[in-house]
Length: 488
Image 1 (cartoon, helix red, strand yellow):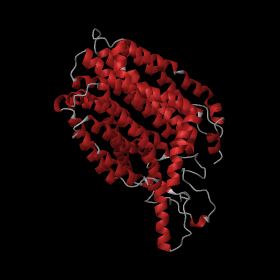
Image 2: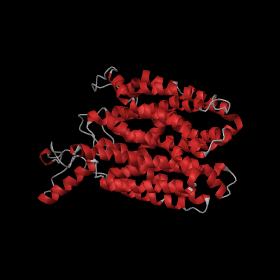
Image 3: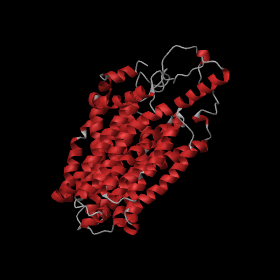
Image 4: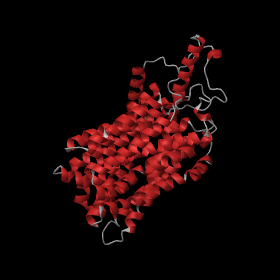
């Protein structure tokens, strides 16, 4: 959900700024039972939990696939592991495209119908993968499964925000992200044991069962998107009174196709024209790609070199998962540090650059973890050392993803969703491509030098967050899109 500065006339991207009789404006009453933020605490907590669970399942489905690659390769007699690994790539490409298109549709039709349709189709597209007779079926269906799964990736944080008061928003988003941030790690951990004892097809059956639970939860979640609710309320009042003068600030003047076109073109334009988007998409994209490359590297190091079983090798990701969980749990402390940052005179709140402090810390921790893992991956070194290397690596990744998102959203306000949609395209695009080179990279250079090369790339990119922390304010003032939002 896109928001502008507090107190402005515009609060959502599709508000129509027209002059109408304020006497007939439909708004929320102070204790309006239809307002999501007035619902009972337990129900709003349920919505946050439902969104977290459903998003986690989508992310787990992405990475759990890597646990069964050997089984798929053997069953279908695929000569190259690279071909099987394309299933990870196609799924990530689907997530990138789906997160942009389906989140745009939710602004037209509301979140709930898009959730229900997308989760249903996501589940149905798991069936052909579980029953596949050839590798082509898996690659195609995982792409479309990722496409419909992208709804949860893009829109679930908006639903959490819809039902949360401003002072508890960071806490609610942290609770939501606890599962979703660890989803990439939980996938191989769970998938390793499932593949070892039940085979690769049961990886898909397990996700399908969880998707069924997710669909049931979505049926229990009411519409939360304020523009959609107020438009419904306006139509209801017009019908009850027979007076067409009733209006709300979210009435569309554009058609659905025009809104969809705008929401698709703007993220792509920002990716190539906005300096903040260009550099942050590059940085976050590389960091995310290296994280996904771990799902290729860890099986090589622990299964291939150390001879661990798939289930036991899956537990090697616990270090990364622990680090990510620490990043989420540190939110209250980091929020306090951010609040100590000098206030922006125009808003009275800490400038967006305050959030970059956490990204700077994360940018240093990531290569530390990567160097540590690279030079303790040898079988002659105790297994606990490379696993512990995942703690700073996971902590750094968690800090980068959470607070880079906060910085981009805080910088672009009304265009935040477009900026983050463009970031998703780059992030999932790079994460889908780089792991394809992982097997060749590690077999050619070995775990030591392959990991060192990746760590050096991350070191080279460290100046990006530090430069934006120091000069971000001046960069924002030179952005026409950001200056435009300040006029609202």
